[in-house]
Amino acid sequence: QVQLVESGGGLVQAGGSLRLSCAASGRAFSNYAMAWFRQAPGKERDFVAVISWSGTRTLYADSVKGRFTISRDNAPNTVYLQMNSLKPEDTAVYYCAADLGNRVVRTLYTYAYWGQGTQVTVSS
Image 1 (cartoon, rainbow, N blue to C red):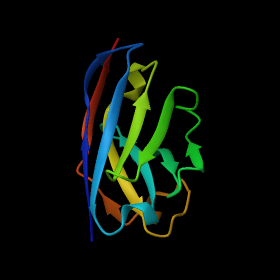
Image 2 (image 1 turned 30 degrees about the horizontal axis):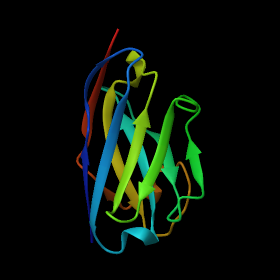
Image 3 (image 1 turned 90 degrees about the vertical axis):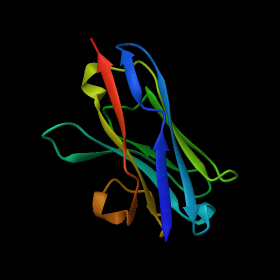
């Protein structure tokens, strides 16, 4: 089993920055890919970014490319999402997810483990 706990969400003005963290426990963190998804009210959960177990491969949604950066530290088992130049349309609950197969992909169903989410609200 893998347990994921997100933190770092909050309220920020447009143009501001936030850094989300996801702390993992359970099975060996360094063996799996980690991703961030987000879900706005009334909308589907969308892919944001993913990073491979080694940190050498990343993939971003077009909507966040150039503004968000995903990174990881395998000791202490944490993945980060640095979000800059935030826009009101970035407002959502952000979820951390893990894939034990280390697949760097956008598809939601690939990820077997999920955190509870952290709210990000960007005011205009």
